[in-house]
Image (tube, rainbow, N blue to C red; front, side, top):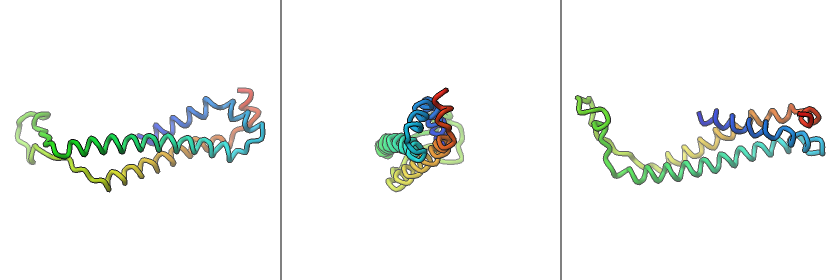
Length: 128
């Protein structure tokens, strides 16, 4: 889901800047540099989102790790084949792993729409 949202965001950024890409290309900016611009933008968006997610999620997990959560309140007091109370466990290694994983998903999801820039004809982009 996150990969699809990032893919969609980068695609919309490229569509909105279609004329700008054409202008920069016609003024001599190489396609690789334009591609790098969009890859870096996707990386920075992912870095900010990952940092916010790790900080907020880590704090929530850390705070809620000492509070018992009773799921019987959610599903009624019927017979459950397991204990109705559970505790969250804060694990820094899982938090770091998930942060790295989300950054990788961001980078991979940014590459596909950014590669469209390579197929862009500068004159067609200027006319659009």
